[in-house]
Length: 198
Length: 244
Length: 198
Ligand SMILES: Nc1ncnc2c1ncn2[C@@H]1O[C@H](COP(=O)(O)OP(=O)(O)OP(=O)(O)O)[C@@H](O)[C@H]1O
Ligand SMILES: [Mg+2]
Figure 1 (tube, rainbow over the protein chains, first blue to last red):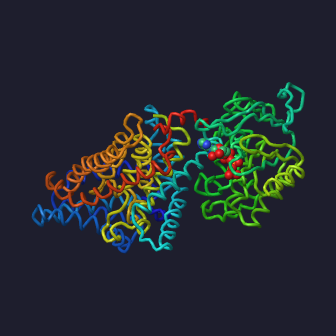
Figure 2: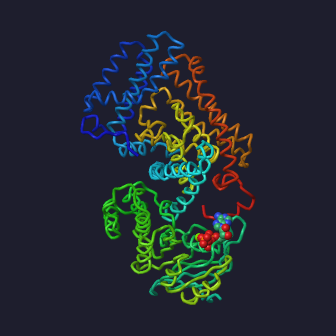
Figure 3: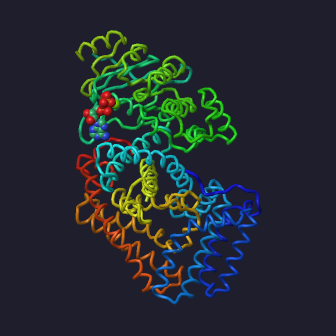
């Protein structure tokens, strides 16, 4: 599993993960609520582009990230032009792209492990309602461990059904996948108990 | 054909701690069905082989010792500690290894997975790191320390599972068919480690009668009952005969 | 709601199943022609199989991993961007959706029935998710609520198919591997005697 993080040493890379995430959320909401005309959006996107440059990313990286947003752009633009005049539709789509690109910048400049720690710390206040941040962290780590195993099950089920000449169909693929995966979960539960994680 | 059980040894101050597994009238019911009954035996040997047909109760016996199943009747003592009354302590004394190497990996990387066993033991970060490095070196996994655990080969994964158990220095290792899914070479590697290299007491559930023959005692289960306990040679010979 | 370690293993494994359902080509749906995936199928199944609390927990863990930058959403998307984009509300809706699906399917700790499972998947897996997703989408894209709701109906046929498939799989799993449903559903009265230490 390749994380989306891109290593670097820029000031943006060095900002602590927690505050960076909070700042992002506030900025994203501010842009979403207040940037209602083309000028504001142009200003905001200029800032975001400046942010990419400051983080050491060139125009190529910006284009690559924009390309990953093509479906969002297409769906947003199409639904908008059906209901709204074209300039308004374009403005709204531009704002959505700006906000998402800003958030992507945070992801690109923050290590997964730093964000994991930030999430665990951020969950601290939820202790009062019975959430144990360490357990959440444990389950997240276990999920990362288990994704390749489950993906392997999916591949082997698909291959087995192809070998029998069956056309792979959603239901007949997912059903055995669930059985294999949940058996795996039970064995993992045994391993957890045996290794003293109670 | 069971060995009579003296009273479960206590370990009062002064006397050396016992290294005995003691079962007294033990039964286990699962989903309303009795899968293990009337198990009464004392096992002081270091290497204990557990054999018997499919479904005879071997895994249930192993899971009992590993703390994964509670006895429905009777008493079990591991080195003098009662399995139910001193559950926490017994769990720390027993390390379990299973057959499926994949299903024993909990954390993403090799080093993290081994370190997981030392959680909540009140060790400093440095101490954990030191022990992890030493353990990985000892079992030849040091080079793969930061590799994703699932990128290891089946044999290496089983070695990892074993390392994750041995790092806690348990007093008893319970291995339920640890070589069942391994090729010949890896199977020999793991069994040599368990039988000849570690100092711990070992309960080895296996269908590999060659392995059972290398143990100090063999326990045979049939139909959820303890069928026979004796030197491995006669137990295995009779089992072979019964298999036909 | 207190989870034991065996629950944690199931939650982790189900979060991984949701991730694997989003891997392109892992599970073909509509021949991969449309950027629709089986991930909402995973949401319905999480609730239907694990029940309300554990199902919702699996979705939360999955989304946290997406937030920290793992590309686990269908088509390899991930990172903070998806939580500020037009589909953010649907992602948040997944949590409540899995919960409601589980609450309906497992209502009264009874064994799942055809009609309750279908109802749970449609209400939790579709209605609830849209109810959270549509307003957030309208907020993000500045498209009027009614128009947003209308445009979102394009995805309705696909979601209805997924609800049918989820129902079939859940009932099949109940016959093939009832243990998957955990101890919150009484398999048989005798199962209560299960001496497995929990
Ligand atoms: N969770 C469970 N609920 C009900 N019955 C069970 C459960 N686990 C095992 N059993 C039953 O208990 C009996 C003994 O099973 P066990 O796994 O101990 O056998 P085994 O000797 O290890 O067999 P094998 O050689 O096939 O591994 C079997 O009949 C099995 O079907
Ligand atoms: Mg067995």
